[in-house]
Image (cartoon, rainbow, N blue to C red; front, side):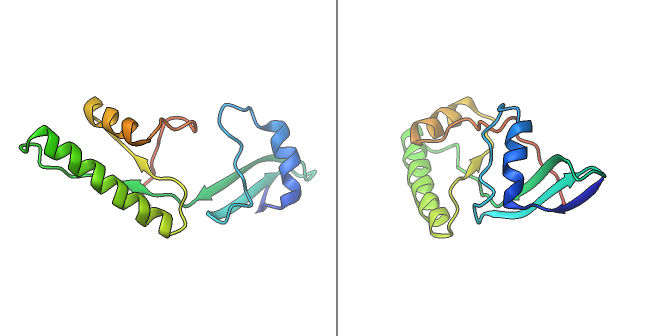
Length: 124
């Protein structure tokens, strides 16, 4: 097996092996920092890996404050953070939530469940 840089000509082969259980990435997107293809000894594509720059939203809120104050604060913070993320050229922001109340508030604001599958993290 050989790992090499991804070539745009790899897209057709990768689409054929893509199982459609998550959206096919757009490797031409400049937010991809690393794009690699793995091929066998006959140069047949086995797969590919992509690392895409994204952002994570972290909200810290004083839960002793009245509910309305917290809701207004989260909405104002989220809008301000959204603008900052867009100014940096990013097109998405992830939020990891434990509370269904906060999740419902973020849904109302426009967050949706990721179609990419369960979120996993590796600490480097």
